[in-house]
Image: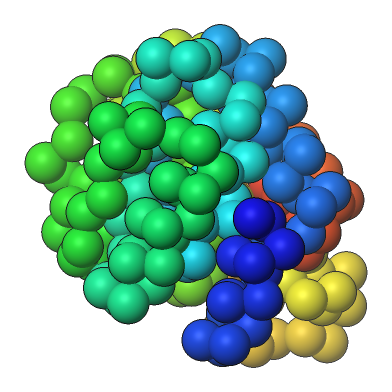
Length: 190
């Protein structure tokens, strides 16, 4: 079923998380005994399946995306993977419009797999949404391999660099960049 979800992602022009990044997401969800997770960027459900596999059996994944078609595919993938409909809450909309409606301190993990230009706003939202000890994870922390190239000044790379720096310098986070897939920036909320 993950193979199917990856294939469908390619068909609709999306890059799904790699198996290594997926395994890291599963690990982080399991290590935190996650019961409530927010995913920004549903895609075709690849990362959602990995997160659900690491979450508690009674856990609920809230996944947000603007693309209804992607969510329709993801819903099917979640069911085919054996997850009951009540394990997922699929919300269509822009994350920055939806996140303010979610409860403060109620989440164990927030996973961001969206355009880097929205990273800063997602950090602010995650600080409010996560309980102390909760984990924020960004996909794409290596900016397509450009993160270490000082000459790379495109908007995505600059935003990723600024996000990593802000989280690293903040007293609210304990961060690490995990070099799996496109790179995961993981940070525990203090």
